[in-house]
Image (cartoon, rainbow, N blue to C red):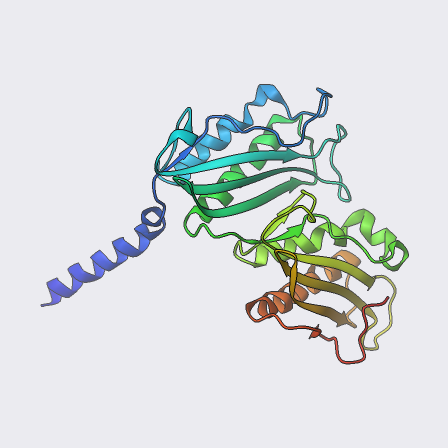
Length: 301
């Protein structure tokens, strides 16, 4: 009897540890990825000699235990197939804390002519450039990890802008923006905390189809000191839209009186607001007040 129970436990463990690979269906992928952002300036194109697309495909095949396989003409496949488009930052100078370099893949999974799901994954680096092969390879490997994980549950996510717009430029701490830009850091924090249900895109959000969350930074105070409540804060508004119709909207506010470095405050408050928004997304309502926001909180600085 004990031997039978032990064998059963081993079988359950094997099934659990193999579940991710088993959940991914065989899917054909193309050998190359077209650039959606056309450019004629050779300096702006990522390092062609690095062959990052081949590295991406090899990593994707490995991560999916060969469930994803390269096919010269995957569009002709009658089974599952992935199509891609690549976007990239075009600055030729090295990245810094306030201006990262990034690579984005958007794609669609289809089964024959039936759309199964869509994604947009964006990875950035705050050092190096897209002419640096190590930087480019690391971004490609990270994107391969993202796509492989998404294939385990290939739904269409909620899209957000990779760079969040602001209501008024002078209401966002300029010194903080130069070192740890809230407009980039918050979308990154929200997407990372969402388990892929929220996905960043560099594309024009107005042209993006499906469900999207329109975010806007209203105001921040992350510098200065005092110990009274609300001394430092981040306020953000959001509107959840699907096919042109608003599903719900909110004002999110998080405050702290603790004397941390500005970038530490950005990280902490971003995490708190991200948690507030993800809870709201499970049951979106109109005119919601999230976090420290109350009925007196307005969508003004």
